[in-house]
Amino acid sequence: MALLNQQLQRFLLTRLNYNFKPTVKNNLVNTTTARAKSQCYCSAIAIDAPSSFSGVAGIRWGSVSLQGLREEMEDGAVIQSDGLDGFSFAAVFDGHGGVSTVKFLRDELYKECVAALQGGLLLSGKDFDAIKKGLQEAFENADMKLLNWLEMNAEEDESGATATVVFIGRDILFISHIGDCCVVLSRTGKADVLTNPHRPYGSSQVSLQEIRRIREAGGWISNGRICGDIAVSRAFGDFRFKTKKNEMLKKGVNEGRWSEKFVSRVQLNKDLVIASPDIFQVSLGSDAEFVLLASDGLWDYMNSSDAVKFVRNQLRQHGDVQVIFLVSTEIQLESSFFP
Image (cartoon, rainbow, N blue to C red):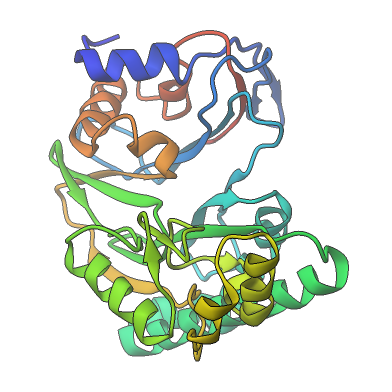
């Protein structure tokens, strides 16, 4: 293993440690492990494009989901390599408040994307306006179905999830993104961060736009959280900030979080949390080496440059995308390799 800087070593040894016992079935390598010893959790996908240093044709995938001491794993990762006219689909979900939303999205979001993108024909046509319209429709439809499902099947479930999806073709990448997961592209060893987090705090242009949108919808920001509650401003689910906004206000009064006088002055006229994605198109030239897609459980502990350096060194050594994730000991892991 290549020498790592101290921050990356500390993350790998204290946050992503696990024991693994690999088994092979149908050319897939799966590993399950011992009990978790950390409170962090994350999901990540590495996508290795054909490059001069890999010497391998075609796209290779590696993915991992790690759970710490929390009772439930609220993150998830999905990879689909068919149904989109030569494009591949990869998604990372970062759940909060429960697991129901991520479980629902693991199947339904892909189905909505396939339908809205006409089985991938829109992606192949590379008409960005049509692709953008299709992905907006897919995300909004998935969220509407999720909210209905939560209300009918899990009345007390107030879960939600951010989601970042990539569609990768031979020479182009499309991204549809809500929340605080992140996509990073390695261009000849340099990290190119392709997404911005949707958060109701900070001084970035995206954050300022989100803060303004929330305030125009009648909401407020307290301690970097919408109504003092949630720290992401775009997500699936979270019906208390969408279809049940007024119920959320009444519940806050009953719980003593704010007064009736305060609530009487609040006029919530739009959804405070939305599932409308930012959509990007990225050309993949000869300098494109690999893509990293991960929830903030990874990015909270290492920056994009360190992550790219680590993955690049590992690919140079052994060329196995999945082995990149198998670097230490003693945390629960679910993993699969797609050759």
